[in-house]
Image (cartoon, rainbow, N blue to C red; front, side, top):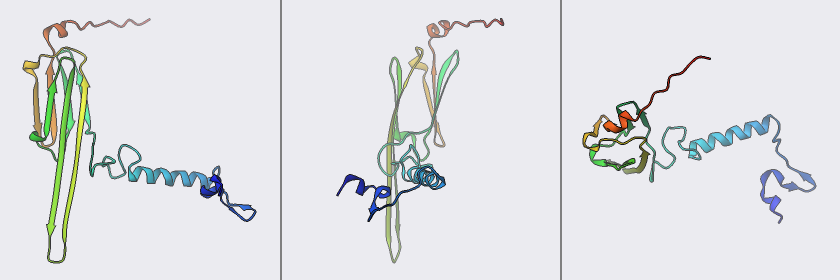
Length: 169
């Protein structure tokens, strides 16, 4: 058996080659269906249902917004279904590390059946800091699944900012 016999669109029946029209509308349709299936079953970062590809077990990546102004660096992370005990925040000289683990278990017992579902996932995110922060004034608030971290810059870091005036030519 030749290697080309294993490829469906290259199989031969007798002397007639069965070929798929990869350049026409059928080929385009086939690629669209392939992409749809890949997205649904987790070939990308998230499936069609919005869950990370391996949410059932493994790592997931929460959505985060990072902003900076003259006075502070602010980080907002969406962590639905988690509570403050599931989150670990570490601040070093040049980075902020946020770790967490989500565990969920649903159990249902009825006369005719017993069903239990478990889902878990963990994440680990390291955010490099662009300026020195005053770790004594750093704050983290967690409310309704949203983590907000405020990292005030040191006085030296605030003074180090130089504004450049833009001139019209």
